[in-house]
Image (tube, one colour):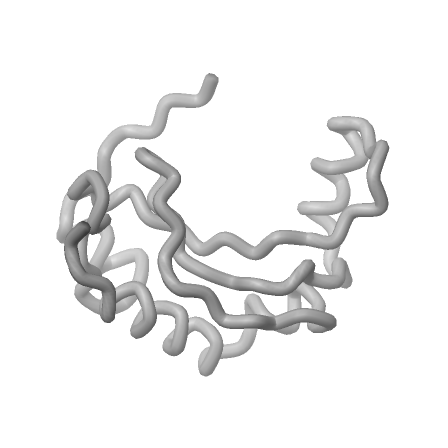
Length: 107
């Protein structure tokens, strides 16, 4: 399995363009956006990789920030019916999801 080096607070701030709180569950800064794509079911691994790379894929619904260390999912923003590319280029969605993450309290 791919092992990701722990990010520092400064690296996280650089990546997100603002200061982010650490994961309320584990304290990690290994954060990333999660944008689930609609699946038909029965896709091979190769097809799933191709779906994630090429544009125009419709989202399943929520967009959120996820801790890649403990898999804690932050509060989500529903973007059902929009494409992955559309949501990925929307500054308002990015700002809202970052604000939602930073609104959490420690568990």
